[in-house]
Image 1: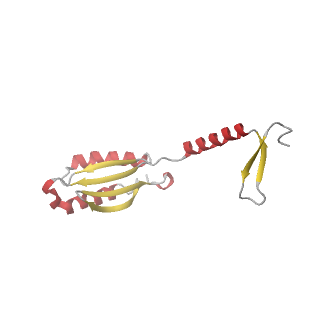
Image 2 (image 1 turned 90 degrees about the horizontal axis):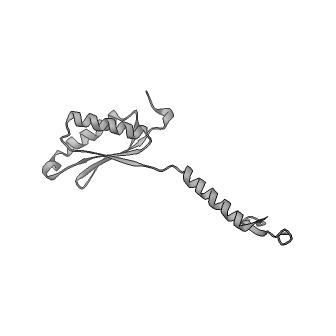
Image 3 (image 1 turned 30 degrees about the vertical axis):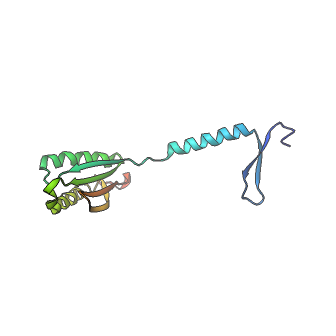
Length: 139
């Protein structure tokens, strides 16, 4: 039948019993496959991770400034990586850094949920947040 119509016999699903084939133009079939793949990639959500850096002795004004940025990032749908960077001897203030990150978590609870609690990795204490789904956000 394919030869009579000057078309190709394309195997659609070889693992089916019996295998499914279709009489079509092979080049057109390949074009449609590429088009579907490109469309699926465009619809896939890209996860963006934004970072906010604090020091263990971050001042109130700086904290509020960074808090507003964090709220904006989470409301835009990006993940947030907040970390306290300990420079030199400031590593002695680990408790201050942890308190700062837990305070941030409390202030951001209506914008996102904590994905990872404060964890010390080398000179950084890191905490991860993921955005709330739009329907669950409190106003």
